[in-house]
Length: 584
Image 1: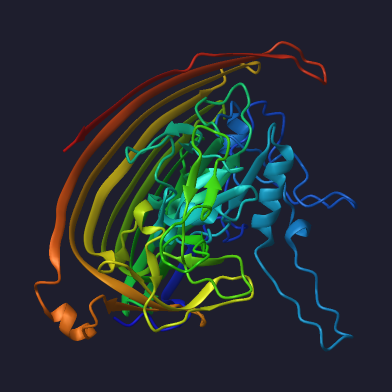
Image 2: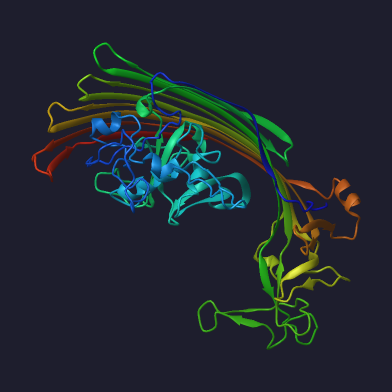
């Protein structure tokens, strides 16, 4: 069986449709939507609503208007349009020097960088943020992949952090500073996914519905516990984020070159607010996204490389007195290991794999998201009501076809070069080319077929009321309900036979060929039904459901009128999680 040809993977995304319509109802204002990162709980900052002159020596976004954490007690910070202290001069791209004709000026979305920098600077703990000033501008295909851009955050490119045998086109397994158990939040509220672990399924959240993502590497006393390595807060958009009426529609096509298939991606958003006759205002926002991607992952791999020695000093093929190497000398686990691998002259040992294999996986991933929000603020600006809804649906299937050796401890000293062949090694003694076969009939080789399918969703709905009965008393009431569901199916059928393997690892991609142990041709060996048999068949079904009610009440009273007010917050959160799981 020929190995895979050496070729580099190319991912292509072709944009087919991009339509953005802004209906400007106000006399002034910009089309770009400012993503609001909610204010800090101390709320001593004042939002920027007018362009302020830039002070020399003060970095962009250095004021206190852009604060993290969605537990704000301030109606002003939560209800003001364009809640950013980042001024126009902060994000203005310098003009090119016309005297130098060879200069190239690269422009970018500096507003996002300035806002993220301001969030980090003004936070009460170690926070990093990714913001998307324009709808659908958050980078990458999922929140999980966007998080890897944050310093100290890493993801894995495998199907799971503990499964390095299966490569994944999209990353998974978020870790902060090398630690797992990351807790997830939606808009500063606790959330979860029933797929396992403490975090939500970051891969399942469409980036088009997200305004910003905040990563907390250290927790403060007023944050919900549970994130051993940290917490990730996903902020969705709200109607009062902008005073403009927004209608947004965008489409693109995802194409996988290995798979040779293309699938669409569509995102739409509508946001509008009205001034009421009573002097208050009301706003609604609704958005949705659909994204499907088909891809294929090809891989070749080696079994474990082990050091091989030639302990047969007299060449008679058996262990005589004084031959072999002593392991764990002087301990209860002392043993003698005897190996007779034909190590080239001039070397004490070489490193040789126990075999090699190949794998092909076909993926079909679909992600659908819905988001809606409504906000009301009264004329006195002392009452703000916010209702939010988010539903993230995802489904994925993959088909795995694998040819791999099943080798164990007894195979370590029983695999040798095929008779009549001489392997090659590099300068470090690492095996590079040759044919390896187990004495007595060849390596035990598995021909695997595995089909996996998962479907699930997470739905989060919440209501928040902020009320200032007096200038000094600030009340905050918050309620939330989360429901998550997942259905998994896993079916495996494996065949097996015995053969050797020819490996040529001198190129960019190792070339792998199976070699019959008894000297038959490859075609004759695999055509015969007597040489291959059914090894096993298994299946697994997992049904998981979970929900959570959460209620919270906060009271803050300002007890001083001087320039440094003393505050006395009183909080009483209540959460009622009820995760239910059923497995078959």
